[in-house]
Image 1 (cartoon, rainbow, N blue to C red):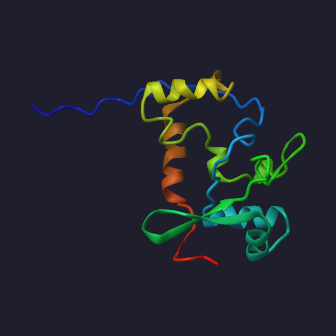
Image 2 (cartoon, rainbow, N blue to C red):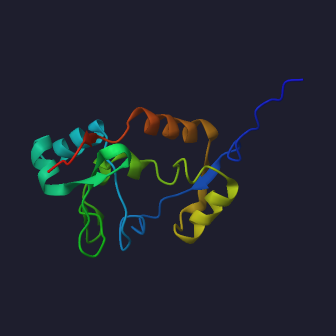
Length: 155
C-alpha cells in the first residue's frame, strides 16, 4: 500500500494581516538577504546603481562553505537601514524576504512554529486567511530567488 503525503497544516490557509507595526524591522539583530532581483528593485527605487546601493545599504554576511550572502545593513539600534520614522522607506519595493513574511519555511515547518510567531507578530492569526496556493507561491518565489552570494572574503 502506498501512503499518500500528508497535507501541510496550512492546507486550509493561514490568517495574517500586516499591521505595519515594524516589529519585524526593528530592535533585534537579523538579516535581510537580497536576491539579484531584490538588489535591482531597491537600486531602481532609490535611483542608485546596484554597486552604489550595495556600498551604502548592504553588508556581506559569512555563510556556510566559505561563502558570503548579501544582506541589508542595520543601524546601531538594530533597525533595518531602510526603516525611517513611520515605517519602511521603500515599502513598495521591499525585498522578497520582507514581502513574504511570515510565510517562510521555518515558520511553516509546523503548526507549533507558526503559533510561536504570534508572540512576535500581532498580524499572525489576524485578518483574512491566505490560501494554500498563495502560501506555496511565496515559498516557490523564495526558492527561485536565492540570496546573492560571493566566495571568499568579500573585502
